Image 1 (tube, helix red, strand yellow):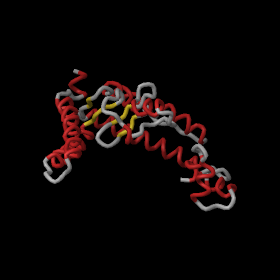
Image 2 (cartoon, helix red, strand yellow):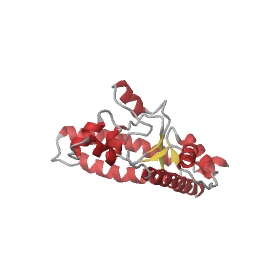
Image 3 (tube, rainbow, N blue to C red):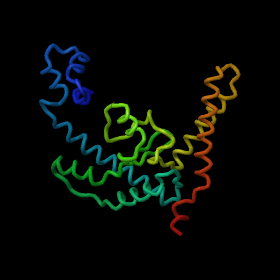
Image 4 (cartoon, rainbow, N blue to C red):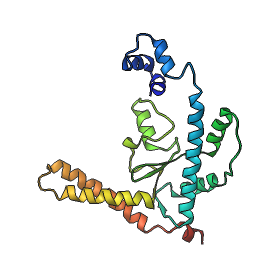
Length: 210
C-alpha cells in the first residue's frame, strides 16, 4: 500500500501521515525504496496472471463463447495473439517486465463488461483528461461509460448483466422507493436490455469463422 501511495502526487507526506511515521525515511523504507526485491515477485505474478487469463479466454472462445460490443473484433484478435505465446525461460526481472509488455493483451474483465484497453479511445481516460485529473494505463471501472468504443461483452459478462437486470426490475417495481431512484433504475434497465438483445443476436466465434 505504501509503495503506491508514495508514488502519487504529494504521496510521501500522505503516506507518512497515514502510517504516523516521525521520519519520511521510514516511509520510504515502507514504500520499497530500501529493498525493492519484492517487486520482482509482483512482476512474475502479473505475467502468470496474464498468461492464465489469456489461456482461459482462448479456451472459452474455442468452446463457442459469444462476444458482442464495439470492441468484439479487437478482443478476438488480441486473445488469438496472446494465445500464440508459447512461454519462455527468464532469469532476470527485466526480462519478465519485457515479456509482460509483449504478452499483455490489455484485456480487463470487469463487472458485467470487458474493457479492451486502447488509451486513445477509452472513454473513462478521456473524461478524466478533460477534467484535468490524473490518468493511468488501465480502465477505471467506476467511471465506465456505456458508449465507450473499448467495450466488449462475453457470455460471462451477460450472465452478470442478467442478474443486474433482475435487481433493477425489482427496484423499478418497488412502490416504497423514491421516484428518482425508480426512474434511474428504469433507465439503467433499458440500457442493460439493449446490451443483452445485441448479445443474443451475436454469432459464436466458430460461426463467424465459417
